[in-house]
Structure formats: structure tokens, C-alpha cells
Image 1: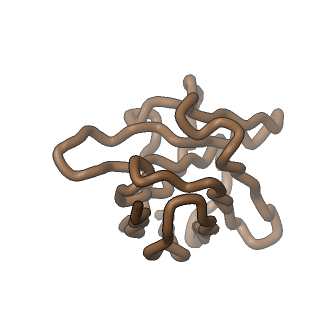
Image 2 (image 1 turned 120 degrees about the horizontal axis):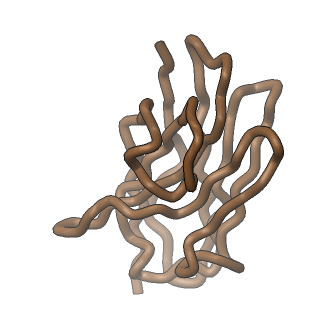
Amino acid sequence: QVQLVESGGGLVQAGGSLRLSCAASGHTFSIAAMGWFRQAPGKEREFVAAINWSPYRTYYADSVKGRFTMSRDNAKNTVYLQMNSLKPEDTAVYYCALSRGYGSRRSPNEYGFWGQGTQVTVSS
């Protein structure tokens, strides 16, 4: 199967930056898309960003557009989420996910493989 390992979370002050990484291993053939989702306490998991593998295309939630950038390194089977101008409302556990199918790229139901999550805490 596929294993996804996130890293890069932590505590940062409002206005600061963090970069999350997600390394995929195992049966990484036929990647259709990879995405980032987040879940704050008491809230549902929500879409943050995604990359459609081919054709290449990126997707962002309105709440992060202009502040977050998702990128990929094909050779390393790794995706990144550069988060700038962080706000306290960005505080959540961030999850990396991988899809082998078609879809909007924004629904968690499209993704069959998930990482364990990494905590991002933004202090005011």
C-alpha cells in the first residue's frame, strides 16, 4: 500500500511561517492527486490545498489562497505546504492525503490514503 509521513508542524506566532512536508512511500504508482486537509478541535476535517498530478493543477481553499502554496518534488514523491502569514484560525492538525482516482480534489472522500497528521499551532 501507500504510507504518508508528514513533518514540519509546530508552534509559531501569528504572521509567521511554517513549511509542512509529506513523503509518500510504498505503492506510489498511479498518483492522481495529493492534498492537504486540516481539522481543528470540534470541527470537521476541511480542505486546504491539493495538486492534480496530470495535468498539473493546484487548488486552494479560499481561506488560505494567497498565503499558502503547495508544491511537489516528483523525484522524492514528496509534497510541501508553505504556509505564510499564519493566523490563529489556522491552528489545526494538518493531514496529507493521496488519491488514485478522479474528483474535485476538495473532498476528503476522494482520498484513500492518509498520513498521521502534524499539529500546527498559531499563537496570537
